[in-house]
Amino acid sequence: MQDLRSFIGNLSINAPDQILVIKEEIDCRFEITAVLEKLHRIWKYPVCLFENVKNLKGEPGHRVLANMYADRRRYPYILNLPSDNYMMGPVLKVAQSIEKPVAPKVVSKEEAQVKQVIKTGKEVDLTSFSIPVQWELDGGPYLTSPVLTKDPDTSVYNLAIHRAMLREKDETGVLLGEYSHNYLNFKKYEERGEGCPVAIIGGYPPYLGLASYARLPKEYDHLHFAGGLIESHVRIVESETWGKDLFVPADAEIVIEGEILPNVRKEEGPFGEWLGYTGHKTLSPVIKVTAITYSENPILCTIHAGRPSENMLHSIMDGAILYFRARQISPLVKAINLPNSGCGRLIVYASMKKVMEGEQMNVALTLATEKSKIVVIVDDDIDVFNENEVLWAVATRMQPGKGVHIIMGTRGTPLDPSIYDPPTHDVMIIDATRPLNKPFNPVTKVPEEFMQHISLKIPLGG
Ligand SMILES: Cc1cc2nc3c(=O)[nH]c(=O)nc-3n(C[C@H](O)[C@H](O)[C@H](O)COP(=O)(O)O)c2cc1C
Image 1 (cartoon, rainbow, N blue to C red):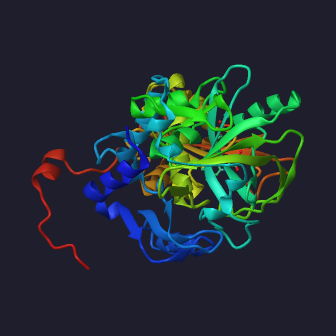
Image 2: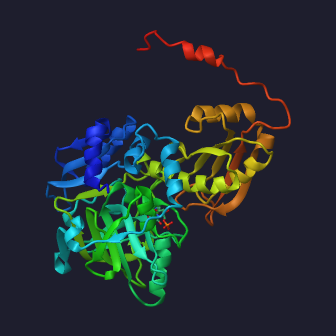
Image 3: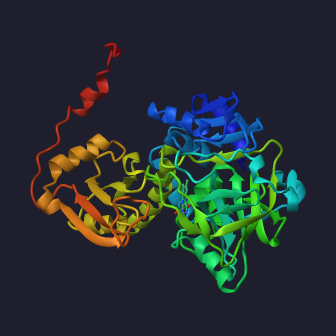
């Protein structure tokens, strides 16, 4: 089982260029984001382990980890794949895991690293953590962590990443999109006049963040899915507040337990959001924190919102779900990529071997979700991970009068500043596949045997 510390250790030994340890004292207000932003400007995305961060009281010495998901090359280390299998490999592994869930295993408190320190009642103080203030216009410090709730009728666990703004030392807001499964769970409790048991997983093993991000059917248990990702059970332990009514991940670094209060909404936001724009203030549910448990010298995980740190997570996880769906329509779908240029969601490139005219459009319609605005379908000789190749196919295999299809008025994301009011969006499908009913000029190429026996000996420097 891979906890966060063994993941860090593994990277340090086997991929040291993928991890940066920052020992200098740094503040959780803006300074962490400033480091990540400077790295972003030079397109560098190592995991950043800040070892000496000041908490919200100004006390140094706390640990924060960022950029865990920012680079595709990291996913083989999370998903136990060969290190060079980082393009379609993670997408395929996640898609396959959907069909192979593994049930979690309950362990005792003594076996749970997250129970090394337990704070309850008046001892609860979120300001003793280094919760980052990320962007200039943000309403406060924000946790960007997996939030765990349970369906009171089916006992199915849901994990999803939600922003949670710190308001008091024992209170946060939480933005639960009305489509989100955590919101639907919360509503069930609220309609009964009850608070919803909740846990924010403030520091976590890498696979748990992946499992939290997956948009699975509501009846699919995210803890079982997390087990499928690592082909082993996730270890869980009773929470302090809810006992057996809410189990929490035993191998987490930090668990913040509480209750989402019924019939209470408070202003939260703004927050520098996923698409790179500041999102609106909202009236959101409120979490009353009842206990915080953590390991010794815990590591808080943060996601640099609206940058590859978040976009790559979208790309891999939404890519896997879309691949899974598209393959149900056509087994000839080869690869799928949700590039960073579309923030890992708004743009979808898919390649397929076209054997029947029209099938590419069936596939494209499957990919036209509430998040994707541009879907480009190309032939299977095009590498969807090479944006130049995709755009070359669009430029040379497609006429806009025939190849561009616009579907108007589907549900979109309110975070998109260009969205209509009320919030619907349009999807543009670009069919850049070659027609089957007429000859198409062959692609230029050198005979394969010459490509094989010629090797470049000229220096390519400068
Ligand atoms: C950094 C980050 C922050 C997010 N914040 C929110 C949020 O505040 N509210 C929300 O509803 N979804 C948020 N999401 C998206 C959800 O995690 C995602 O849509 C998830 O699939 C929803 O889970 P569900 O299918 O179980 O509802 C965020 C995602 C990331 C990566």
